[in-house]
Length: 336
Image 1 (tube, rainbow, N blue to C red):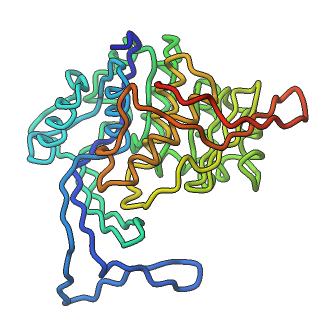
Image 2 (cartoon, rainbow, N blue to C red):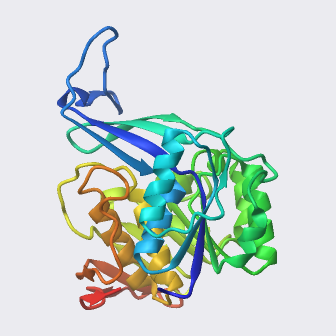
C-alpha cells in the first residue's frame, strides 16, 4: 500500500438504478425531458442496487489505487447507511472516522437511466453535518497527507475544513458540487488554500470568464496552482502553472451509465498526482478511470485498480513560458 493517506470528506449514498427504454428523452427546445405520466405503470428493464456519492466514490478509487484511503462523514444505522459502510469496508476504505448514530440517515438516490446512458437522479440528501462540522471529528483532517473534498452541502463547512487543513499544511483537492458553487465569490476566496481544483466546463464558467477549456484553465490559475476543467466526452484541459495539457477522448466506448464519471475523473487525477506523476500521467489515469466507470451501471463497479494497463491517448502539451504547442501521443503504455 502507498504510504500516502488520502482522506475523502463528503457525501456517500445508497443508489438504486432503474434502466428502461421508457426513459428515452424527448427534446423540447434546448432541454431534454423524460416524461413519466401520472397514474401510469412503466416497465423497468433492470434494477441495480449500489452505493455511490461523490466522496464515497473517490475513496474507493484511492483504495483501489493502493493508497491508505480514509472516509469522513456521518451515517446512521438505517439499511442504506449499513450498505454504504459494508461496501466501503469491502473495498478497503478506512471508515473508522465515520460518525455513526441512530439519529442520522444516509443519502439515498433513485437513478433513472435512459438508453443513451444519461440519467435523472431523485436524491434524498440524508443527514448533514452542522456548519461548524459537528458531529464530525475534524481533528482527523490533520492526520492525512491529502484531503479530497466534494459535496459537503455547506459553504461554511467547506471554509472551516479548508482553513483547518491549510493551517496544518495538508494538501487539498476540491471537486465542489451544487451548494459549494452557489456563491462564486465566496468559493473564489477559498481557492488560494486549494492545491488542485477540478470542475466541469459549465461549473468553471461560474467562477471565471472564458469560452474554451484552455481559457478557463488559464484564468483559474490566478486563484489556484493546479486547475482541471473537463467537458465530458469532449475531453479535458489541465495546468500546473508550468505547462498546459489538452486531452481528447481516452477511448470511444458504449456508455451504459454516466453516474460517477466526474468523481472517477477527479479521483483518478489525484491518484496519479499524489503518487508523484506528471500532468500527462494524471490526466491519462483520470480519463481511463472515467471511461471504465461509464461502461457499467453504478459509480464504483468500473473503478480501476492499481496496475491497470493504460494505453496512449490524444494529448497536447503547451509550455506556458512559450507559445509553441507540443504534440505528444502520451506516455507509453504503462502501469500506474
